[in-house]
Image 1 (cartoon, rainbow, N blue to C red):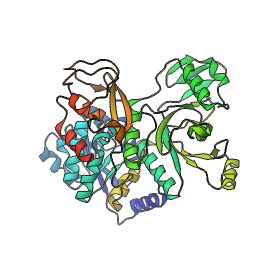
Image 2 (cartoon, rainbow, N blue to C red):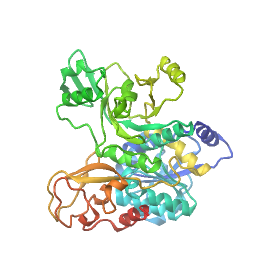
Image 3 (cartoon, rainbow, N blue to C red):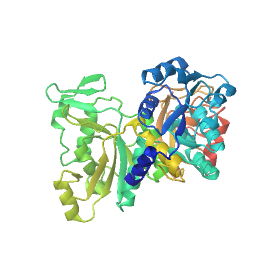
Image 4 (cartoon, helix red, strand yellow):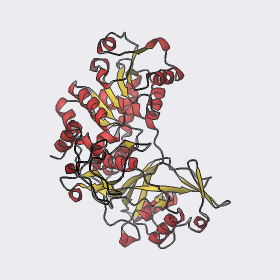
Length: 461
């Protein structure tokens, strides 16, 4: 998070000499897209020129709701129609093949579809157009090779501010610039666990359930591991992890070099004030076996306490004791033994923030993440049941789960060269049986997308 760069981007967006930055947007009818399209209405120097979504009727209705001029929205079914649009008109298309590079400076890829998103991004880079990648499913497989290709083309491939991976990558970069020794970095999971002392119930999004024993667990106590285990038991087996979390942390890993401590991540049920004590080394009472890790926690709070709001954090070692004691007096989160501190941003604003990335990429040629990410971690899949040869591994649901497979995050050396990235396996057919507990490998996949496979293998070199 470089606030000087943010200021420069914002200043450039207001300068009369600055050209209008044109962007294409895929997955344009989704929730993220709405937030970006809405924010664009407030920025004179930013304009959508090609919007791609399978539901053109819904996309048109969304644009009209946001105040876009009906006459400017033109549905196009072929490349000639897109090329013939007048300045100020916006092409609405169903097919990513109709994303005419002449019509945009940067592509915002938000389909969430590994194969489609990869092809859209690759085509944009081939045409020397910048790419802001919102589809973590694409990035987790092909992000390294796409970044390499972008560098060869002299354009930017970047994560997008407002998305948790980009925000955390920026926060890690900020901490490293300050010389801070990062022990752990991560984010909160999507939905808080909100405990009401009066009723003994927990609310998570639209679900409510009884967990009265949490009333005696709202402080961490001396035995951190025991308290975390008791809190987890109070949830009575309810799932609090998500495939999307593992996918996002993979993107962070490749851009920062941080790796998972355990393949399922720790997912502690934690309050914000506890993070510096929890994400400490085991010899200091925490849960970590090593430093330099990424993780996700489940936010536990009372109804009258602020949410972490899907925000991001770094836990660092403290150095000068009086400095951090002073900061603790000011309310910052410092561990009880004074050896660790948690620095956090309790928000991510989705497409409301993304214009900063678009301005930075086009005006200054800078990505949010690493210029050359590395395949230091792998989003893999471990079978939850025996799966027979011939089974199609469907991807679906809100979190883009793969049927019958648990997402796991592994350091590259632990995964092995033949492991299959999860979203290469999505929609592929199994060539042979997979036993429960077995990692999916490239040998298991009968008809994996060849372009995605080549991108994955290129990124491993």
